[in-house]
Length: 424
Image (cartoon, rainbow, N blue to C red; front, side, top):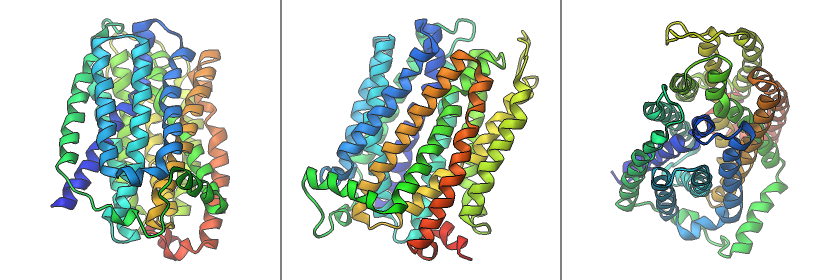
């Protein structure tokens, strides 16, 4: 029962942050309407979120075992819950920037704690891979739920109505619920304090940097960086693309964007089944190539769409239904490469490794969103989404190098299910 309570708490806190992190596309769309700012200014929300994630993860990741993973997650909920309550009380773009900075700080604490806790709650690499995929799949369920939650508070007749910020009262309530669940739970963190493990901040930071001595690590980080760059380009700007290019109303633009999250959740939950028959490297290559083909085929369908007064779910442009299929193809990439990298390291090093994962993921996310915003503003959303073909090509290269390093490192026969299957 204690183990189930902690797994439930990990899943729920991830769902809370899924709602908040991936609301950035919706908030960008609504901030443009409510506060009258332009796209490059609105895209700064991504930087407030991702750069704080990167900075905090780099500084505190290796040191978190001393604070405690459970306490770190509770602290994160207090910070972000308080920031959520400020939004409806003091509605402004400055408050919105503060919110996303707090989201970044809190998620850095949360992701390092969640990924490190997975290692403490699982007995072997197979269980580690399974629980990682499950929690990442539930993260996408949270993204899906968050899009519908936000759209319920958006006034399509008056998109600039600040009443949409009342959604943050609901999210603050969710933070309080998960806080209580963590406060009443227990987590044995003794394995994170192995004998001889560093106890000073300087030594903990040095431990993180020493991971770069392993080629497997920096090839993996390059893969994670490129993946998140692609994911955030679509995830952040799809609501605006739906609104400006496909001529959908604000609320419907957000709801259609939720299909991307739904497809990603479906893909991650089903990935474990597929990996029983297909090697992880082959599957990920098929996914990346499939993403490129989908972009090339679908984006021409988004050209010259004419606004219609009677637009609805059953007569929307074809591209609105097809672009979210990218989520199904993107889905397995991130959890699989994370599990391969983490399960190849001792548990005391999981916090340091997760810190690096979060840092490079955050940098990839903010760069992807910024580039997409600049291209979107200078040209249009179609050109912005075509840009994703460049990092997709580079991702194929880094995945090849990552596979080569896992084979050299012995992970091809000792890693999680996905890696074991690759050796067959």
